[in-house]
Amino acid sequence: MKLIQWMIDLQLWRLGWHILFAILVLVAAASGIGGAIAAHASPDGSRIALALWAIGSVSFALAVLSCFFAILLLTRENVKSIKDNAEKLDNTVEMVNRNRSLLGQIAQGVRLSDAAKEIAFRDADRLELAEAILAKLHQHDFDTTYAMIDEMAHRTAYQDLAQHLKKTTDKYRSATEEGRINQIIAHVDKLCEQSHWSQAAAVIERLITTFPHSEKARAMPSRLQRQKARRKRELLAEWDTAVKRQQTDQSLEILKELDQYLTPTEGLALQESASSVFRTKLHNLGVQFSLAVSERQWQKALQTGQQIVGDFPNSKMAHEIRSKMDILHERAKESSGT
Image 1 (tube, rainbow, N blue to C red):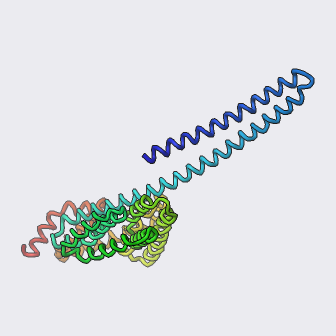
Image 2 (cartoon, rainbow, N blue to C red):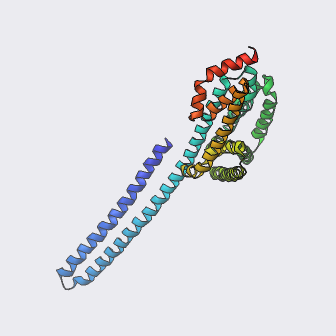
């Protein structure tokens, strides 16, 4: 609805400037024609002609100025719209990366035992639960917030989190409007420190909706972008250091996080160094796999082969290992005595 209203307002705004420009041009044209007629109509018409020509000149000058001013305003609106769309695109990219990470966790979960799953996904679960409760809190739905916290408190693994959220809720509920805004901003800063950008963006959106007249709230999107830019610079510096020191594993870990910040152009600029790191990593894994097979260490060979297939699925080495995976599984079972 907001987008539709914005488009309607923009069209009315443009129409208003078009009408003003047309009126001024018509006045200028009419004055010029009237002046020419008056000049030829009678000997005393020169004064009238000069007056009409002066009016026409002023009208034409105002028409040019209004056109120029309208173009400047339209350019400003377009720049603002592009900036807003860029921020929305950044949030969408973050959400895609988050979903991609979630899909990776799901794929990992298929191979994990129930105990291992609980350990692997505990932090993610706690973050999602906390954000769901805080979303209700920031919408001032206190009854639902307390009900969710009470439900969480019945689960042993989340009792400490429930206690922390209850204290947060009590503090937020008793605070002034300014205090509530400051508490939400502090929460956003904490999410930014942990590089949870999509969650931070969602909190900022709720903050602006809840407190639309707050200058602090309206300044948060720019603050978020500065935080992201700072983290991006840090990762680029860490990447450069790790590549120069030939720290392959660390370089790959940095690249996984850095990938979500890079524009296509920046990605191309890093392509050569990234390709070198990937080739080195694949070579090292290939050597480990070959040694494991030569020494008949089938468990290690299977694990290394799975890592090659998972990390470098399109490589020739991965294709060859994939075709021998059944044999590796059989040998690994035989060596473990199962």
